[in-house]
Length: 347
Image (cartoon, rainbow, N blue to C red; front, side):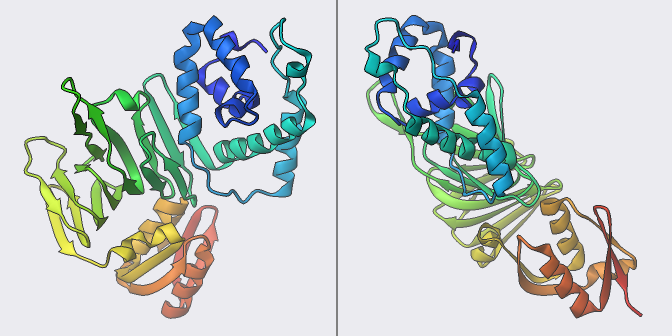
């Protein structure tokens, strides 16, 4: 295998490289250390690939047996061991079938997670993560902070994460953050805490260690604090006065207006448990949720229906339950045309 032409992305998808990163088996250490000594120009690519592999956290994927079989067939067809050094001992050249079974199994998990469920786009300067409609995914950032991305959401941050004075991410959509404390050394050998900053189109959220939810869609940002303390700067201008939030508070910023109130935080975090909680919310909000999370457009035959209020808890992974509930409560007929739902008032 000629690794000299590999990019960071190629390394990430290489089974032999994955085995070295996750130390399975440990004997690969000699090969990769020797290879790196001979290819110093590839050090940055290798480090980037290692960091990306170690930062990914995969939820168990629900994949059909046909998909697994097809992926396994592709992997077993292309797996080829790198050529060992000429002076290697014979025992070092032996790549057991058990190892390749492990490599194939791990690669199926890796490729399934990346290809079927979680899009990771890497450029020279940034890493971007994106979930599709109806998907919830969790990822671990390089500092150990955990981010759970709701459906149809994206998160972006600098690839050179550790070199930044602040830990800064950009969010579009919705995510729940569990932020750990982190610090960097100074010239005086002291350590200074690194801020964690979430940017949306409307606001900047600054924390040191906390848990909170951010919903950023349609020129509106909503922040609900579960634990700790955050500072929110409206308008993303550093000159703006910061709002300090306490646990159980909700702040909504839209069109230069702020709404600040005490709430039951768990109602706004229910999506992480695959639940949708509606608390006397108008159907136009329900329709917007369907569009944002599932890519479904809702059309009301009678505009007055948009103001009907709905209270209830339904599973987020089965929208048919929600549609049946709405149909029964309001005596609606809901028809589907392609990706569009039409709400009709039954007479």
